Image (tube, rainbow, N blue to C red):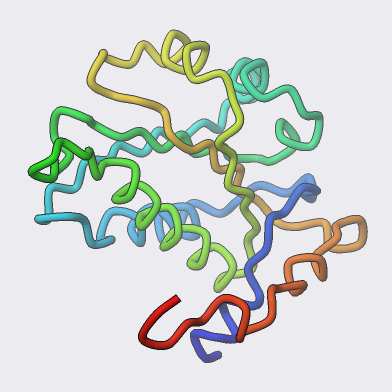
Length: 173
């Protein structure tokens, strides 16, 4: 499969089969996030794996969607703002580095037949309290992980993209 084929295969999965994720597949996805590039190689991330049903339900209180808690695994990707690189004007690149790692993880999951859905619209304070995160760690992404139930999912909607010539500009805007 080419990279473009893989990128087209990946979509936001909102329906999961009731089927556990094999440990080797979970470890593969986590490893692709761990080895992702980051600004100045600071690697300001922590990946918290949630698999226990009670904890999944508690995490679900911060993003109350029924489909979300049906995923067999939820990854909580946190950024360490003390460790993240800062530009001269103070801009913190932690979120950008987290995005790179999460993108690696979502594509790796798609490659091995798993689905994900990048969640940012959640109650970060609830997650921080539940996971007892130190002040320097921010939960940035919730990433459900599991086998997609393609029979009930809208997989094709991710293929609707803006026209190439509307988003690509040459030399100037």
